[in-house]
Image (cartoon, rainbow, N blue to C red; front, side, top):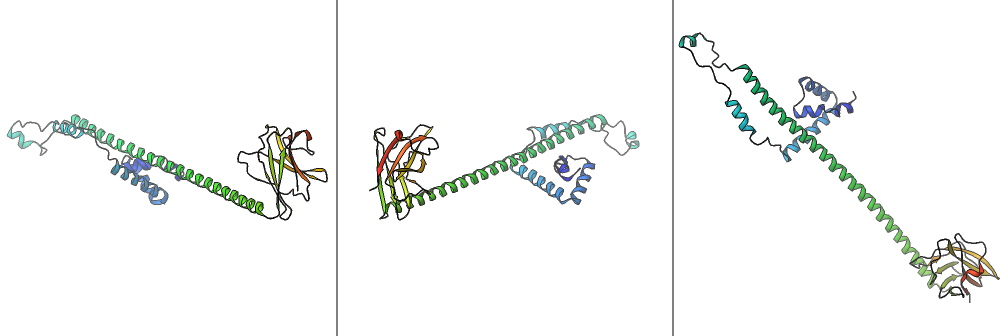
Length: 284
């Protein structure tokens, strides 16, 4: 049997609670002397039993002491003397208890003591189990705190990036070369509008969605730049509730004459669907 199996067999708990047999006592003491791991586990069990006995002292059943004393007092006394002669010839043993009664009472007292020790052992095991549960709960709380901290870190990082992007947009919009291009609604656009902020010096383009409605789930709006009468794709975008500015990255168009937004199948189209043009505006 390896050390882990020996430790988990329960013999160390029996030894610590005083319920081990003489053979088991010798075995445990030999194992503890030769294996520091066994000695450490035995010390931990003793400490747990001591701590539990201090905090949750096990009291004997009410009236146990009175019952034991009554049983002892009820044991038969010495036999009456028959004569002085017999007294002189009898052995020096003055008391002659009935063996069966004495043995029975002693057995009952031993059973009571064993019952008390067993109860103490169960209480100690219960305490160890409760300690283990507390440790597991503490471990779960620590893990939850770590996860919450990590989520807060991610949220802070996202807010930091968002603030950085807003600041960059603010600087770009205030730049002297930034031109706002108003995209007004076509006959199918209703009261929709949008604004493109185009900067030929910084080579940046931002889209303000203005009052574009949310399209159906299988549709998306697509931005186009009109150069020499030909449309150039500037990407698809989602209409969000926050109406944040959208940075059109990697698709800057030199010298556009106009910008337009069409409603296309989800994923976009290679060429604009002209009868689905919602807003359009020329660059002054």
